[in-house]
Image 1 (cartoon, rainbow, N blue to C red):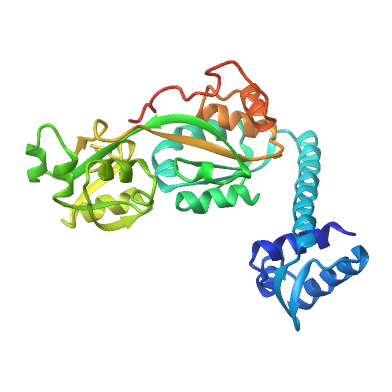
Image 2 (cartoon, rainbow, N blue to C red):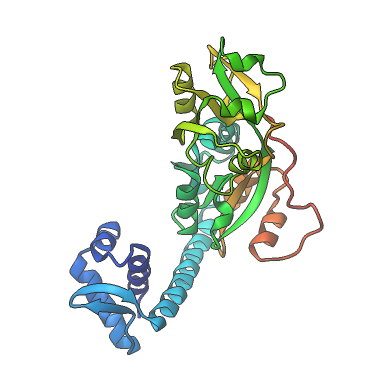
Length: 323
């Protein structure tokens, strides 16, 4: 039994039994993947996958257990490599962060600036997407951690640590009639076409719940993952923009006015999601603490290992300064 064989069966399950996709992703040949899987099955004397001819059609019951154990072994093997790298050179390496556009564009820059000054030898990689996409990257071990507001708690593989709270604003052109609505209401918002985030009106979100509680159906005409795209289309007159307060910059967003909407919606909490069992290098702890000062190494380790801390030790420290 080899780690390569375990990596193959794990990736086959992850890629929906598509051996060609596995071969492409792992930079090998399809026959090579199939051959190694058969060798592993012969060694274990049990079928991991169901087949129809040469095509994989399902995962057997023992196969599911084997794949689960394989993923644990692969994770531990990576941890061993990370420990070695940590002690070989504690001030160099890579840090891969999966996050949304709003976090990357409006919240993370001060943290990244401070981090790169402290660790010039660490190469940073930022992967962007919607909350589900970036959470999936961290859950699969393809990013060191995820920073997002939605979806992080939906992945059992991730431990979610709350970082800060924020709320929303409505952006409109300078002469928009909504500016005369005092106070701003959900009923008023529902009268206009809305441009907002693509995750904002999926079931269970705070925005969706707020409108549903008032029996309102908002007219969402365009969604995007990029706050700047939302503001662009608001400027073109497509609708009013509903976005995170920190995504509005008066100096740059000329021609647009922000109306505070915090009284209409519950606060949202941005979290860092870390894969369970993940080995964090020293500079990873430092990055997290730079971003969320209340998340000390002790708090992070306690959360990753399921240890209890005194009440409030993991609570976000109020609203982000950009809100």
